[in-house]
Length: 332
Ligand code: NAX
Image (cartoon, rainbow, N blue to C red; front, side, top):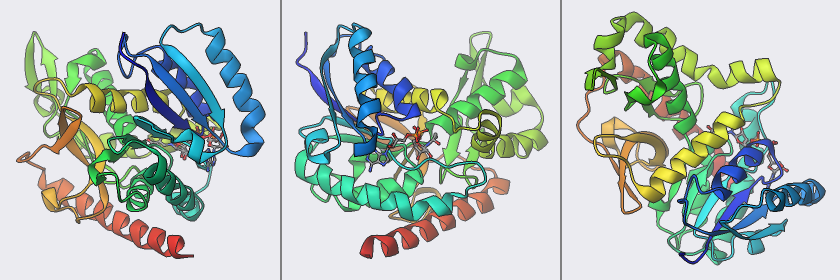
């Protein structure tokens, strides 16, 4: 057996972590033969709850778990970590706008960036889930200058999964048949779900989703708004934000970073923009990427429908605004 890797989950006493830790611990993310030490960070008032989570991890009797370390100290949590799931933050409540969350959460990611810089392995892969995820990832990377910027990514995989699920439901096919749905931009209501490069497998052949759905008005209209508002719809129904699906998406994202993407397939994630597709540079913008040897590469040369171009601009502008606000907050 391989030697254990060290994996930190922050917000470990929260609802996303409750589903995510199990997926990680049973081998869904890093592989069925990869043992791991779980480092679980939360804030001091949550240590009692976290103790209960630790009991349950032990009670799962999972053979890959080589150790569990609950802590409220970032220096302990980030020590020599190979992979980091930064989930912990203040979740959005019903009626709350993302902007209200920004100042509270950005400060958390500044502190955690500094801790990663000091204590983590230099090749650590960092996935930011806590909102505003794109801007938190940017701030985290800024305060961890000794770790390559490419190692920080933000989660838009839940949006991608939602997009695949909507298309599959519309076509009445299994979700596994739908590939290459893209999410551009911010993980917010301005995100741009795009099926222009997506395919669906019909009779063993990949057919463009647009040809299979045959309803561009839906694909460029209701489909997009459904994905943009899905998080809010789940909150309205559940009175809590998405957790099971968010945890699944976080597992999928890190799985692909670790294991690579399948041939012909790309996935969406927030990465530091190099200006591809006209996105502003130096913000964390969601692009389609392929991954090999744990390195992502933005897929180039895809065509984007003219109707989506103003939406891409708008989500880029929102990210520039968030960045400016976040940098102002970090100065204080
Ligand atoms: P919960 O409130 O259930 O859990 C959050 C946990 O984080 C709590 O236990 C809290 O004590 C802990 N925490 C707060 N500050 C911390 C700190 N400084 N260090 C360590 N832990 C800290 O929220 P949950 O539903 O698990 O959501 C977590 C985050 O994911 C929220 O920011 C939420 O908005 C975000 N989401 C992001 C998604 C994405 O696609 N990127 C989708 C789902 C989710 O909305």
